[in-house]
Length: 119
Image: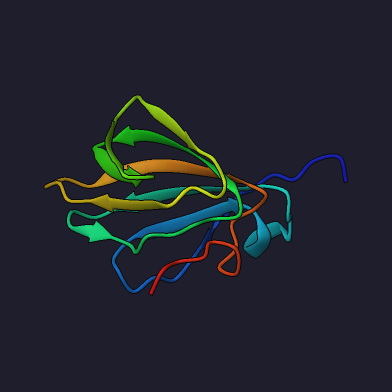
């Protein structure tokens, strides 16, 4: 196949109010090498610490997002991007009063089996 036009990304069901639209990755194209997803995290959203087996790039388009990585707190604002290397202990959250809209790219692709979320 020489190309794939994504016209309807898969909405991944969540229980925390976060919108995840996977455009490319395991769930949509069965691509194990990369995943690309558009996300909107509502105010007050957070998830547990994780130690992923993939690199992750985050690009914020609207709002801001807090990232705790290896003992440091970073605030990623609209127009900024961040790379987190695989094996880092990281936690993402939105403790702010506005939605955070961003894109996430994972290599290899995001998988619930390789994200290694803490209980």
